[in-house]
Image 1 (cartoon, rainbow, N blue to C red):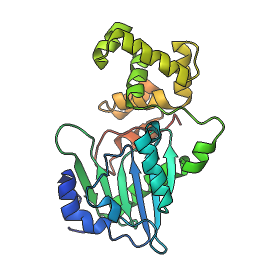
Image 2: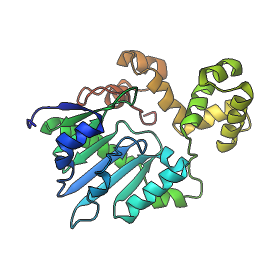
Image 3: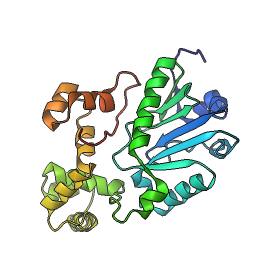
Length: 264
């Protein structure tokens, strides 16, 4: 691959075949940011990625949603057991990426129908920007052990919980929200009640306020507006233009849907 060329590959098979040797060649630092277990599953290769070889530093940054199920918790524990530094982001990751020695970055495209795309970036300036964004998210995240031992850790929402939260924030009637989520009205209301308990809220209004305090509602709000012009998003959401631009629209990395951090 050309040193200054950004190459987009289709599917994990092509990523493994054409860039696998680069991912396995880390000498100083291997960094990974992932929103779920599927982004970097890399069949036949994940176990070969080094974690405790000599002076190699391994940083793994995960979305808090991975703690919502047993498989995710096992994966995080195994990564930590193998010597990786593991941190948890509660505000959503700005992108999903792998960074090798600060010289190579792989960015995952948005999930959707068909094979997922992966952009391999070797241009030094772009890799430096991606690494800076990763470090900002890393520094804002919590160590896995500390997060788990905190007396009042923030609630963990799974994907369905986030969808229900988005419906509550949209103001849709229960019947409409249930239909859009493919749930019965009874099931939807049961999910709402469970969400209120998780957020320790006595009313739907209080649940919305609590979610916004935790940065959950804002991330969904801006994600839903991702295709609008940056200034329009800033005007509608009250988020500074620089925050929207840097986290959601950034020109320095390939465009893809991203979740942003808390209101600046």
